[in-house]
Every structure is written in C-alpha cells, then in structure tokens.
Length: 343
Figure 1 (cartoon, one colour):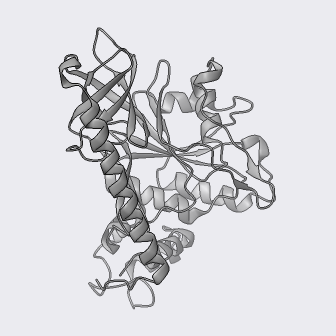
Figure 2 (spheres, rainbow, N blue to C red; figure 1 turned 120 degrees about the vertical axis):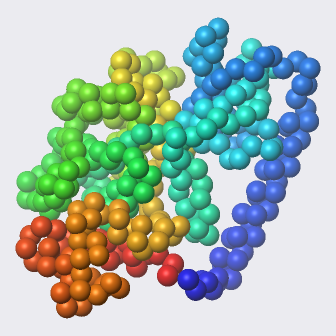
C-alpha cells in the first residue's frame, strides 16, 4: 500500500487536530486532579448514554440507583469511550462521578476520518438501521457503505424507508428498484412514516431485543423516527429534530452527539450524527468484496485468482450479473467503494 502524499492544507489540519487533542488531554488530566478520591462512592456499573467532549452521561445499572444519570469524567488511562459502552464508575456527588473502568465490548462501530483514524461512534450494538427517505435523495453508494460496515462488524442490517407519505411514483421509481434489489438479497426493508405512524409497529417489533444504531444522511428523519418510536415524551426528553435545506433538499445537522434511548417494551436505540460520507479507508479490498453478501457464491470461482471482475474472461461475478443473479447497480457500487480506498 503506497502512502498518500499530504497537501499543505491537510498537514495544517492534522497539526491543528493534534494540538486540539493535546489540549483535551490536558483538560482531562486537570479535571481528574480536582476529583477528591476520598469522596468517591462504591464502584457501580453503568452505560454511556451520551458523550459531551470530556464529559460523559452515565446511566446507572446498579439496583440501588437504577436509571439515575450522572455527569462523569473518565480516567485518563482509559481509551476513548463511545455511546453504549458498559463501564464501572464511582459517584462523587448526587449527580457527578468518574468512570474508572471499561467493560468488555461485544462490538464497536467507528467512523474513519480523513486521516484514516477511527473515531468510536457506538458500542455493543447488535443491529444497524440504515435510514433513508425519498428526500433527501438516497444514494445506493452510501447505503452500501453501511451494509459493508455492518457485515464487517457482524451486525444485522435493516433498511428503513422513512417519510413514505412523500413517495412519488414517477420520481422514486429508481428508489423502488433499489429497495427491491436489497429485499431480494435478504435485507429487511421496512417502510414507515414518523408523521402518520404507518409501519411503526412493524419496525418496533423488528427492533425487539436489539441494540440498534440509526445511521443515514442528515434530514432523513432519524430523530423524528426515534421520538415516534418512543412515544409520550416530555419536552426535555425529545431528540433534536431538523429539517431540509430548501436549496438542495439536503438535511441540516441537528444531532451533534450519538445518544442512547430506551424503547419501552423493546430494545435500545442509538441516534448518531448525520453522516453524508462514510469512508472505508481502514478496510481492504477483500473486506469490501465480502461486504456484498450476494457476491459470496462467486468468491474464487473466476478463471483467474486475481480477477478484478472488470473485463477478464470467464469472470464468475460478471456472468452472474448477466444472468440476473447479481444487480449491475450493486456491482457498480462495489467498484465505486473500491475506488475510495487508499490502495
């Protein structure tokens, strides 16, 4: 793998980010020194429900304080924590405390930045709900990025079409074809409307016993959907809701930090920041190939072991496309995702 040459602008950005990380570490160290260890209560288990800079909201799992939320710092010797992490913490007052240990994770969903460093988003999730809507226009490449990521992490993937009350038969013909392709290869596609309530019962049942992270473009209605799923919320307990940019029908960012919510009678939900781009720079070409589940029968079946599935003779994957067993759109998306890797 050849090393990418950095531009001057990228070098400046990297230096700035490193300086900011240094300042954050200094702030965290200073905050930890101010904690009076003698006043700390007994260790208790909890879960990270939100991350605000150097502070975390920890919901207690201990029987005596079950459901109580503490604003905590974390020990500087701990790795970066994510929403959904199970931790051990000690309270130093009725509302504050310090996280002293991270419990074992069953999964960790991370987002790579431009420097290919992974930033944790959500931990211990079991499923990913890829949320799309007629507007803003959904892009198969973005959907497939999430599907590849879910396959890599061993998570279930659900495609949720929100705002079905805005569907237009002529405008959204391509969207319907894409959804049919995803259903054909085994992905659940659930149609809902957070405005009218259509499909919410089916979605809630699908999420039962899951810890699901909601991902997708800004403006597709993730937060509105979560509010509708939870139902009967107080004004101060509602996820922030944004709208569409009138100029380009693109979403406006409202959720600024991933947050965990409990779904009454069902599983847990994590609302993640809106992501227009989700890079796969940390993955290998083989990982991307394996992320397309319908490609599995054709792995190693081509005439040439190093087949790139472009114009080589006797390519099993291209033959599958010609036979209608694999969609051309998905193959195109595979090539597009490969081109985004640093090879």
